[in-house]
Image (cartoon, rainbow, N blue to C red; front, side, top):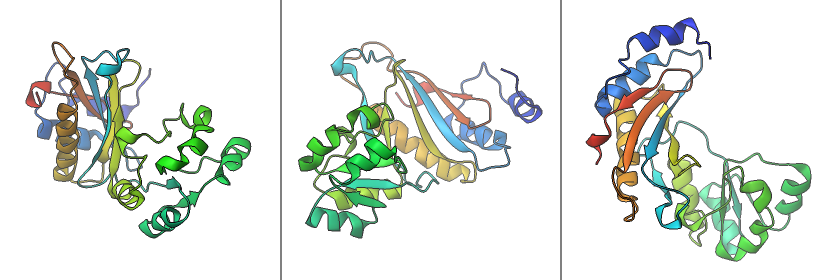
Length: 230
């Protein structure tokens, strides 16, 4: 892959053989985010889990203290009083059966997170083939299948992010924007890493956090010393 001049300049400031302290890594990543738009800062964590085993799966959610810097559109499947609660909490879209054909037939996907009350999961299940591959299926572990729709919507709007292992046993999550201060990014990154350390499956043998890398959308990756979190 051919990199541009700005990327090459930013990469020069980073020692790729070094494992940086979290604060140092955040400062370097922020400095290397030189694109004309507000880049997202992401964490990429390679774990020692084997996701093929159900007892080594990691899936959960954490509220980042300073939010993600992104406006998140929330769709809630609920009816009656719960639908009213969702609207009052600030959900962007609320509905039930009426939303199924819209998503199935019209390909409507103008939302980032889906929340559902348990009694609506039968309806949402019909959309599994569409929502599943996009990572939009509500899940109790992530707090998106719940009767407390008010808390779910407010948490998501406040900066709640979901984390899960991909097929290569890596977790990819945003920790903020390049426009955030170093302190805000460091606080968000710490909240994420604390949650991941707590989520360690008891069946994982050996090293749990194999590598931790921070990178902006267009910038080079900065390796963080994983032992700082173990």
